[in-house]
Amino acid sequence: MNIEIKKAKQEDLKSIQELNHKLFELEYQYFDNTLNVGWTYEKAGEDYFKDIIKNGIVLLSIVDNQIVGYLSGSISKINSESKLDNMFIIENYRKYGIGSKLINEFKSYCLTKGIDNIKVSTYAKNKNAITFYLKNGFEEWDITLKCKL
Image (cartoon, rainbow, N blue to C red; front, top):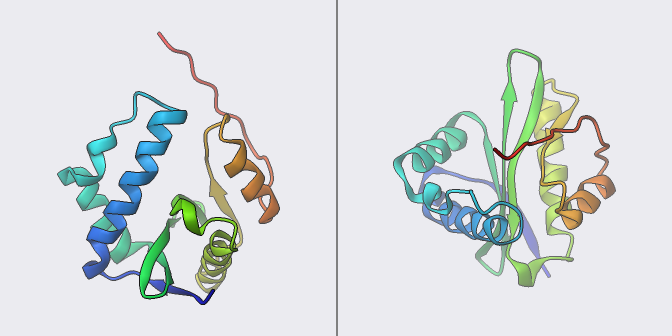
């Protein structure tokens, strides 16, 4: 399988929105039923992705000329660290190393910007994501707790 990783452009917005919508649907189904699944297509979601394409980084994974995954990330100028905001791979393309390629490309990008650490958050119940991030060099750093009222 030939996997290409490229930096997204504004013309990739609709593909990114489609992938992010799929991510939100899964997160809503399995982890957080308060998530606004439609946010991706709302003005706020569209503006977020336009901004992160322009001022952050969105990486696309392409197989056979089809976008099968993405990673979006940002860099904080305040504390000189980066954040992996979102990542999603279409289910049929998982377990082929695509996610690791996206992570490695994001790591390289961060290093070129003088950043030497990346933070990522995931749901505590998302064991697959936690295992994936641990295998890709991340370590547990902090714990966020939530109290439903």
